[in-house]
Image (cartoon, rainbow, N blue to C red; front, side, top):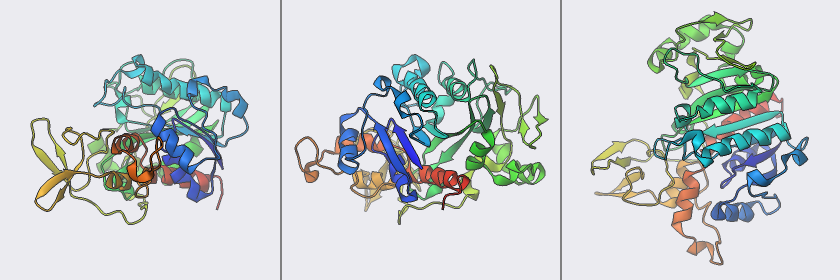
Length: 372
């Protein structure tokens, strides 16, 4: 499998896919420190820089998969929440245009759950652009909110989306992210990557019974306009412009039933989150790793050491994201690796994917392709 990684960052995608034997064709990253990381580990892979200035048509036929996660700050609750009105949010549509030009067989897109509720309906815009619909898609639920998992069938890519939490994949942090998987012209193959195979064989009874408790708690049971399509999946015709959204009510939202993927021996840590008022809340796992290196910040993960509480070190944060320890400790701006500053390391790690989640998706795609 050959892939192109957009918004590459420090290349969690390559950390996930290289053990599978996949080969990167090109990266696209503009931030100085992540670019230095890419040059350090992947000197032979071209970094094309600004995604908006590349003629992606040149790469049609050169990649089996395009992956990426556009800047999440405009969609996150902690950020400006500017949605598609923010220039960073609009980079999500640049991803769509790059995919349309390259036209790979597979696509993988990642972003924060805040994308579901951000102004401008960015998630519906992304789904529409990738599926080939002529208008933004909208959730067909009574409350008008996107659910945690679903499927889209359209004239372009068939899509499946699902929220995955890194804590169920062997790393010591709570990190929920939306993952969208697409296959050119066939939603079934995309859905088989993310969802329970029993459901996709039409075994509605088994899947539905198995997931009643989860579905009830998560609130994703479809309440109106339900019907059963020929493939046995409960779905809703809520799309516009030639696409159809199918929101699954079975047990696929909780990945506890999946075999966990462990990147090495990553111990769970006793971590803390500090509220703005100063109260400290204890977690069994680190709170979601953020981009900040400010020890006093409210969302900085902390750990107990003896009688004191301290923030996580760079190497601990790397482990919590599934990277090897000291992965980001590189020569930078004329200084040796031992002199590498912490601030850009924290930021780049916090902006990255959790490697085990991406590897799990890669393994599922590889199984679909029949690659051993």
